[in-house]
Image (cartoon, rainbow, N blue to C red):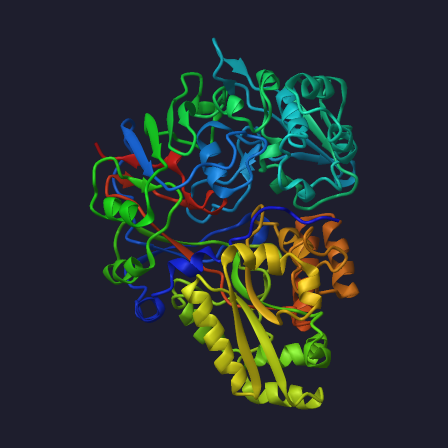
Length: 608
């Protein structure tokens, strides 16, 4: 079993909310519209705060939406891109079989995009049949219908030997024939001709065109997977036209020859500088239930800086409608919240960001952290309320007391196993025979909020007689030289640290938390189990939940897994934060979609 290779949140929000502790917590929710609603099988979504959002009036068609950013996409390739900024780019011109709608209360609900309906499931939950909408067209001369063969090609391209999709581990173990196909693909020469020949002459047993309908694709699994419909939102399952075989995957050559089946096409792409999207003349609104495509053009500039972008958007400067990849500078958020700025969005990240991770293999203090009771004592000694203040206050950073954030299948019912109780902490330490502990806390030296949280934890544990010293390291070393190297943990270089995580998909997404973070059979660097946590009971529960026949059964098992991990005191969750975004007054219907970490540009409209 392998982990998803998607990058974590990397404590991004910590930098954004460093100065919010007093103002955000004191701000009333009066006059705030709440985004509540169903999350499919996942249960109710957490509440996101939207300050008098500019969503009035009748939608208007036309005009140009301008977006300003500081960085480029990861890959301009619809089957390879694996980061939120790449997903934002794909939203304009590449469609998935299933997607997340820009509708308040439904933004983590899996709904049909290219598909005509949710999958038809047969063969005891091991066969998923999906039919593509008639009228979904490639922007090729005269237009060309997207077919099931295009979907098959997309899946094949995803594990190419040049640059494979980073999240293959999300499905490679149970999509029949996929791993065998990819194993052979890995040995193919890195040339266009060799890649094309391999794809043309090899099949994936579990991804086939239905012989009775060229618009129907069948997916065969080795066992039932409750969240496979959500997996079908990922880029590998997006269709790819046959013309892509004329270009190396993820290459700049392909980036200059993209083919769209969405409402816009890539009219211009200067890597690292700009992207221009223009209306696709072959796109049909009747065949796309996800994107309204109100504006005629979307222009992206990628050479700005965060402060300048914020100031331009705040001042409603022409050609500065929305951010592309930046949030709101930390020093500006308190005033925006206090003013209830009508263009400010605060929406849930559906993440655990950050959490305290325990080095369960540390030899320090005679191996004290290997004892569950000692870790539990530390959990009781930590004051989450103060840590939430360090992260901007409860309005920006709602407290999280369990592994799964609200909105993820298995998160209900919510519980708090370790309410702040220093007395209980001292009793547990005494019972464990521990009188003196000296712990080393690893944190990112460049993050002011990481520093604040270290100081809070140092003070909290000091109250129960535990000494905590800090080890501040640069961000590039934090992962590569410390967390991702198991020998560093085993040597006792650190005892406690901060980390963060977000799922690869939403709703029935617990597998994307527990498999990479808490399965002790897979350790870094092929997992993010940085504390080297290992409980066979947890691993067994993960296996059971992964093979649950439906979402309801999976939810019960994931909740049981959640409770067991918290009983083992593997990590101390702190918050599932809301992310602050600002848009200009010209922009209407700015609905935050977690998968793209931004408002959906294909559903905004602009005042002329």
